[in-house]
Image (cartoon, rainbow over all chains, first blue to last red; front, top):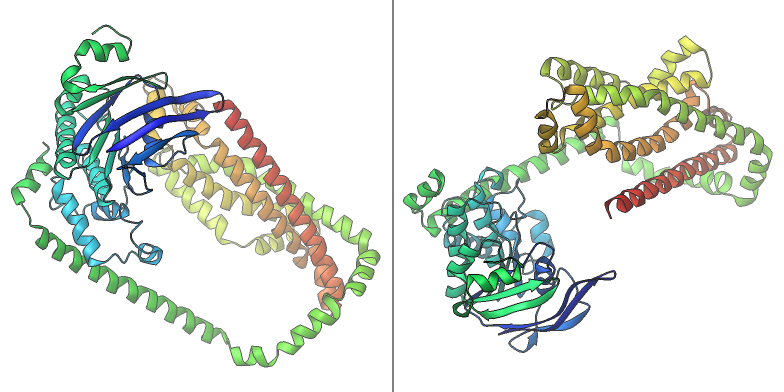
Length: 235
Length: 292
């Protein structure tokens, strides 16, 4: 179980997130909702270790969350266009490989095979050697998922991963993300602005407003009106 | 699902097959890259041999350099006395060098800016940018020393020839850097301004220049540093500055005086670099303040 207790992060005098506490179960997908600037990205970056919280604890199965335990999928993929899909996925495993191997591009056969398996797991069979810059938006985002999976995380985070995709592609990407989380028994947390898509994959909802947690409930107990309250608009 | 995505799932390529393909390709890539590195190293060794590089000879004659360095150039008492004796000459030559660099950069900068912007393939049509690129390449191909010799014919011995030589180098190098920087800009803001009906000049000033202005200033300051270094040796061919006392000291085999000139060059270059770094920091601070 991922347990977050009393998490706070300030930028100068501004509380980006404050007094955040929640628990998430492995094998379940939680959707993080909230208006732009509500602190979703800050929360995800704190969980990923890209930002150091000012206070609070983040524990996984009772132990402090390790640097490589949580993988983050970024909004635009954050991929290197000049590299192949395989090379981008291999970047996810850099913490396991020695620096000189990465420097020379000499990845082990086992790492390469595992990276190809990740690409197959996200329906990108046959794409390993294609330049990422030549792939479609949906394919790129799935390369991002494969890279995150290659990190071998126990927590999978995604920051508005389908914001720039059309509805059909967005649904396909999110379904793939949710199925990976459930199949590999990961803790999944994804921030989304599309309530309908969120409703299709969410096991749990977390809602942020002005950096504070205003919603923490099982998906079955949350109706559109409740989500509307997080956005401060009527459903 | 896109056509390409459907094709992948229909292909249904197995992990083992794709792994074999990857391994084969990476092996080929390894062989090609290793071959290229080996060939390059062999070429460098062959070129060094052709030039007459002989490590044994250099090692055998290391005493000559050591004697000059320790007994003449780096002897503190002698050097201090020389600096005091040549102080006023070196100071005026150093100021002249700085002026050559400053005036040369100032003359070259507007030309480099205009030619650099026009030589960018995302600003002008091929018929304009191709000849301009070739022109900038041609200007860049000629070393500053050669320009200095040419401008001595025009302006006579002295710092004017040096400043003109520096200006030519600035046009060639900075023009090319400006063009490359311009080609890297984000197209979307340009399209937004073009879609409003703006012409080439208005689009360039409103959407292109703002994207490169910081980089252009940084490159200009960097080039001012480079020009200060270049100016310090132009005197060797009679184009003014501290290069003249330097070459005269070498000809007289007065290595303490050579070292005194080198100290002056060091002070000049480090000072220009310090000022340029401070200006860059101020610009960064202003940019950060504007963003917040």
